[in-house]
Image 1 (cartoon, rainbow, N blue to C red):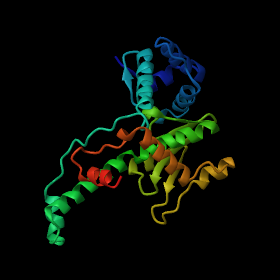
Image 2 (cartoon, rainbow, N blue to C red):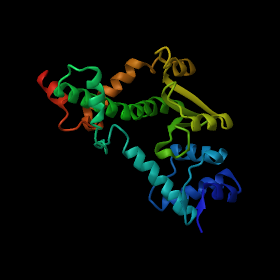
Image 3 (tube, rainbow, N blue to C red):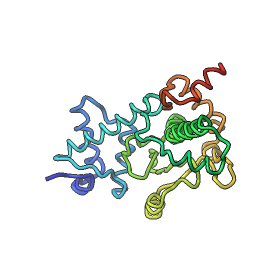
Length: 250
């Protein structure tokens, strides 16, 4: 018989007893229940509908599984990870479609378009991860902790005061399931860019905390520093012709 978060929450007589289960399980792994863990787990206890859908044979094993997911995600954050090559190959019909409209393009030019698209997609795939890590660094001073490893469902950041925050890169990037969840749960949402106007929304945090540390310029600097220190964060196929274009310009 397996247990899940709901079972542990329902069996606990208090929030502290719930947290104690995790503290004891963590100690068996020679890890302490840190402020980040406590804040995120408290959010799970107070909002059981958002608790992760993990199952295990015992509460202790479930707690250790939760911790592993959290740690694996943190240790594999975008500034540290090596992004994988795409698991798919390009569909040749795309070049046919483009060439049917732009009939004078050469095979080489069509291939460049294809690889430019794949490179752009690789960048888009890590864009949200870059934003998440930037915010994790900046918001830490204001009591916010990143929910690494989907340690709370549909929530990206938890605050020590109990607030929950969902972060999106653009205003049109929220899916319907996330939208429905926010209707029934106390989750605030912030997005970086208004997709209709192109305006940035960093003022949300600056006004809230009376600071100027949140800005597009600071985010750009962070992105550049991450890619400089860890170029493998952005996956580029070895045969992508744009590598040669970049090398020849240096």
